[in-house]
Image (tube, rainbow, N blue to C red; front, side):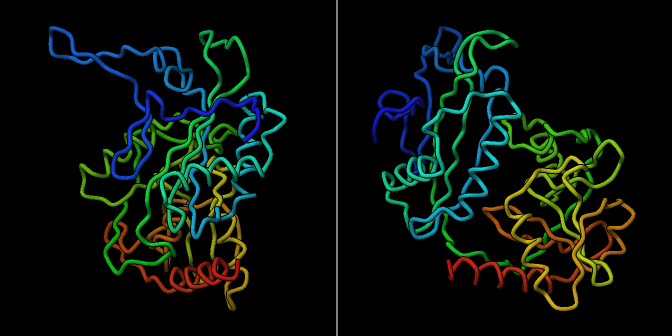
Length: 306
């Protein structure tokens, strides 16, 4: 690779290999109280760590190919522009793909892997940054199942009500500020749930903790529009397109009320790593998984055909 305006965090000092996953970590020392503290300034000055001043893309790789690469790249560019980050001239789609695949190949995980590219503003400043230039890191881990599949098991959800998603543009990007998703995931674990659905400030369903939500009711497949504050999901876009090829199904983007959930025939969640995750139970209502299975088959066919 030639000269780059980006500085790739390589694994010279702060990189550990653990279960074939690339992990970036600062060096630590133990003080007299038994607590560990950071010796490196890498986190003490990192704006992504200090202020959540970062965006990221998580991609799936099968047979040394990034699935839906263009969609990921253009979403990342849009997110960086929204946060007023300076995009280097050399950060093209080809550069994006090359950097990720090089990291994957370095771990010998070309067959099936997930990779996360995190872009953060360079050190300096408090809330007001000293520069809009960026750095980035890439982490890689193995995925056991290359193609998407639906596990025949119970997947129960409920609504998380303590905090809500704001209907605004910032809610639609993948930033590193994920406190709502984190505490919602803790709530789900504490209550024996597989996932939670998140409300927006209009009290409509915006999304799930880790993906977009779809609802099938009376042969109408609906998902909240981006204006509802949900993530502009890559798999959401794929499923919307594939669902339009299913005979007898009307596909719309429309607000989803919590009262609609128990009237639904099917519910499912989408993200790039899992694909389509059917919801089998919401409170006392149990759901079918027929449309989820049809769409998963179509999705895998599309991937095989390239």
